[in-house]
Image (spheres, one colour):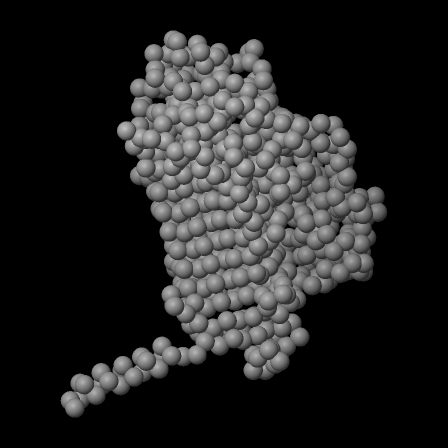
Length: 631
């Protein structure tokens, strides 16, 4: 045997041995010790120690309990056939917490009263004075507190209206001061104790003594730094209390999150560079934005009349993410939901619920390609799907079978804010917002969606339709339902000469005495009815469109209770003409169009049910009801 053959044989033997390495199951427990051997009966104590022992194919089981660990580097590399799994031990729940435990039990004596008139408390413990931030959640009320920048604001008795740069107290919050102590005030702003209909709101918290409340105080920048991680499965874990849950770098790929719950301060998942082959499913992303945060509290930083408050300008998932699937998740109580950046390709966002979002549910950059957004529910959100204009090369985006309901009033601007004309106290956003950061001629195909809204008191001419997508030959708006509770422009600012396509849409609003139905639309004129538009616009747009009441149960739609078992059924039309063929999909090879000859998101036939592992998200998937014979 030659030396070369001998070496080759040894290498082959070695490779065979490596491939046969037995995958190991290890265990971590809050009651364990890192001196143990990591078995079920002798578990390790810390997650960080357990991670250091893993190799391809291994499983790390975390026993139930809370692990106060943060800023952990995660650079593990599994393989396609032997991924690394980190999970809660079956039947238990592990919580990874970036905070401190001192204030988590109630009652306690961690806080001392320093000003009885203001009900201002401070921590008896001290913290390093050079921390970037100190933030906190009210655990039982499931909300974040305001982090005040100014002591004068935290201690102000001015509750509104705003007066220039005069100190102003907006509501429960905290501040780390130069003595190393946290100063905390849980008094509610008395002007914020009614909802949009004038009904009383119960203060949060009811008891303003912090010693009687469980508080999760945290200073961590992130829980995990994913640095080139590969083939990694994270399952049934809770990630809580850090500015970022995952700071993702160096193209971490083939990562799955399943059945996880994330409570984040600013970002859930932040991809610093493009990532690919992720699957995020059956997870809950909770930003904990309190109801006393107004839109202008966050958005007025550049021209604020008083302090701009904590950067709840947040996102659950932020970055360019390709060849990936984001499905059956709940995104709630946040400012923004997803920010899908330029460079994203071949990604599907489906069967998710976006609930109680203060700004845009999805921000979609122009330079994305082959992105599908389907069968999602956007409920009580300010904005639906926003176009991030840019100079990137557009790619095809397929938006279909979604329900976007932004008809619930949200807090817009505080009385006295410098933008009061545009942002009254209670306001409505747009189903399709836009951002002027470059060209907005994106290639959206918007079909078989149900869009429900009402007039925005601060932006009366804002339409229901996708005016923030500039007209172009790859823009399609087909077979949707556009429904306004009151007077609102439906379509605006698109011209047939630009090559766009509109047809088969159901259009209805309950009143329309002062605003046109269409404005600067088709041939650039205004039209008060679909019949008038057809007769006089000189376009072939909406030749199959319908102007009629779809027959929704309005009381059910406006019910503020979220019932996951019935929520989609609230949006099933009853008018039989909705279930007729609209614009043809013949020749259009789009996902979700085969056999779909009805308008809006929900067909006439009973729907099937898909339920996630959290047991709280139910999505109704439209069935194929008719087949269309194309020439």
